[in-house]
Image (cartoon, rainbow, N blue to C red; front, side):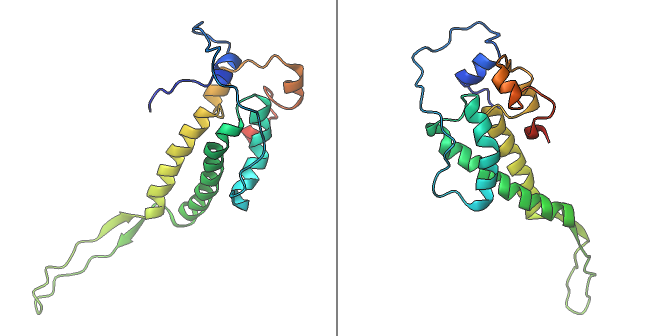
Length: 166
């Protein structure tokens, strides 16, 4: 996985451990929780759950809405793929076809093929993880965040009962 520059908001929440200079000229777009109009209802559910928390941390801005909307849409697709894989497994058997001397067919041995949905499930899992790291939504990224504001603690950040962890 590539090392992308860390968003300044995350760097500051982590305490800027590397003590590198923070870009003071970085654009500071308006923080928002407003989803794009095209967002499908399935994705809007995840937006409504997560966007206010990211906006409160200063991570979700009006410029980030398209990327975050793609993340929310991807979560909905990933859940559908997860349901398929949980119901059907990751692969299916193709029975052998015995040789047929009358037609000269050599037959085919039995084999196992992966469901396309299983491959898609894996690809979406990897893609969503990259998004989550960019938006500070993984346990390893959160473990480096420093939440000193009592207001953020009251709203569930930095506590075990944060519903993002469930």
